[in-house]
Length: 244
Image (cartoon, rainbow, N blue to C red; front, top):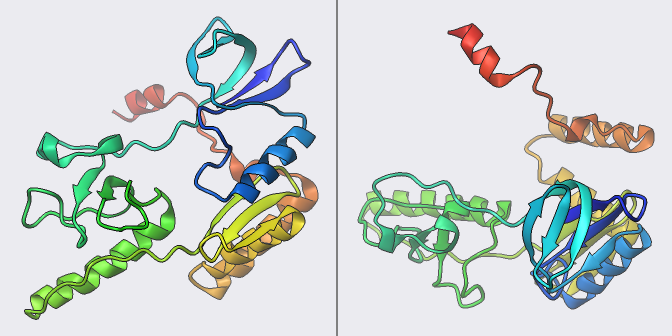
């Protein structure tokens, strides 16, 4: 949760209910992220939850409040649900509970991967895998191979997540990265370059890699944030009425 504070000349504030920022990452990253944000002028409140936002004021769980003209909510991911799946097959965040083969609990022919799946069969992730791209990609590949194995009368293989690391950008010239199961920590400009390199090499072909790298370089040099904005001209309801 972040709020821009009018009282302190629009000084940004970050409210987090966890004891650390970027909780899934390493202790070194917790400290690096905290220090980097403080240097940027961000006031940080940990172990604190947002209870309400009304009339330009954010009410906090400790009884205090912050005056804010702009509020950005970032409280996690809830999976899209649909009718037909039994309540006992749903887990935290409306994610469907799946076994080691991504088969939904209670069903013989329904599978789920990525954000809408939660597995409790991986000893390293007893509360489910993180809702990021890599688990979804790896589960998709494993499920595709398992469906082919089943079609050939072979036994499927359980999913095993390979953690390629966690990364986060903090400001214009700072990023953090935990690689090789948090054994290697990168921070600062080196972390930012590592973030860029890993994302670029993950793209499908050289054409996409070159275009993306060029766009990022131009945006960084010119401070142009247009690539991060979503433009929706006009009112969506009016456009739908006009189309009908």
